Image 1 (spheres, rainbow, N blue to C red):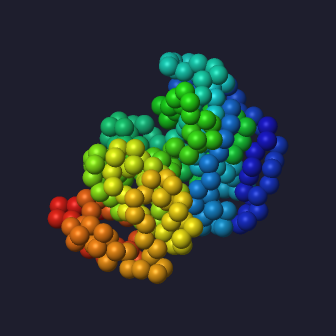
Image 2: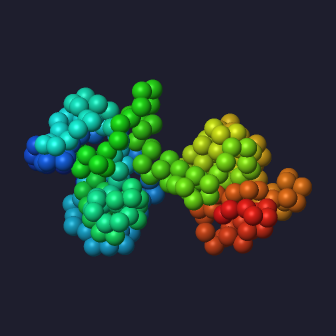
Length: 260
């Protein structure tokens, strides 16, 4: 089968490799149909792996596909079913995994496509517990964006910030991958959205996605604009994923009792 593999810094090649064996007990075999592209892929491509890894390495940290076959003991999946996969090999046994918080796994085996072979190959075997069905009406390409991009936003906005319908939110970097996802998800529950962008073109795109107000942070101080637009009340939630450059301004944008 074919695989897109990293052989060294900035050295990607399409290789012929051996196909995986039949899925073991508790596993499913998946034909990969679409692979997402994320910053973590770029970091790996540039050699910023932050950990030892063995090259060549199949790339791809998030993807969607369809079930080819199932191993012993697997229920709830059938050949041909469309699925999306979690992008890290978690242990399934630690307290966090047992509670469904695999992102906090104490014994994670590595991030797919970054530390260990990823989804950039035609077939892959995965533990069935790390696979979920794709709803009808969602394309393979759309589903491939769910595990990292939309999963990150879901965790930040709803698990952590507890964003509620009708609240106000400031989304930083509204033109970025998770910034655009945050705008769409917040708008879906009727929130008022303030977004920062780096240029006017990105501002128009953010408005098209659902942002009510946009601030070009290159020409205006976003904290001042948000305070002005909210009549100095501030917003309920700030979606902060930039870091030190925006942290202090983000705090100034929060209303009393707001969440960052």
